[in-house]
Length: 220
Image (cartoon, rainbow, N blue to C red; front, side, top):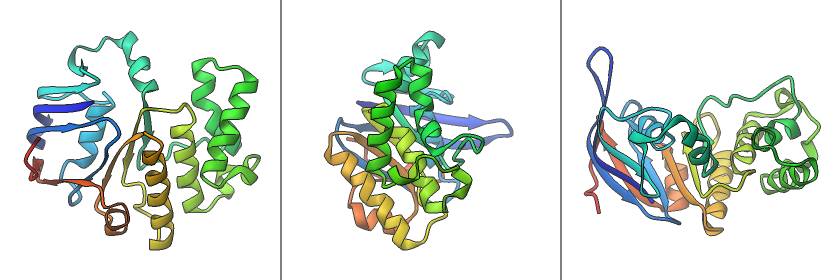
């Protein structure tokens, strides 16, 4: 489903984020990319989402080489993905409901179906009763759950999460980990970049360890 073949990623100034990374993530897997800050975890997720391009090597999703992906094909790729990145990008001038509805509005979904899907996503993360609230009125843990609801409202096949518990206490981190586990049980491929031991111990996922941009686990 997701494949890296001898991938390098370099940034201006000689910064090497990834070096000769090869791996394969199968459909329905739950995978944690672990490593210290700066190890290259976020870069891997951005490559999967085609937010960035590799400097060398090949990244593919569902056998589609992302290097040659045309601009008009990007929306199709993104519809397969749910993205939970560190900067929430919440719209504080809109309600919780409207934040979650945004991906469906962009996709042109009708009002009735949008309402049904948003309510279901908010219910899944325990925020159905806060649908009319402003995101700024939510706690940090609730804002993170709001981001997850927005990521899953369009029913993606792959869920990517970058340090989803970075600013949460252990109890809230455990609750978020349980959410990801439930999505995976429903058939979603889940890839989480984290150094949070609570998440790793709770999920007991297949683990890929990065160190200074190099993958320590042998590629399958």
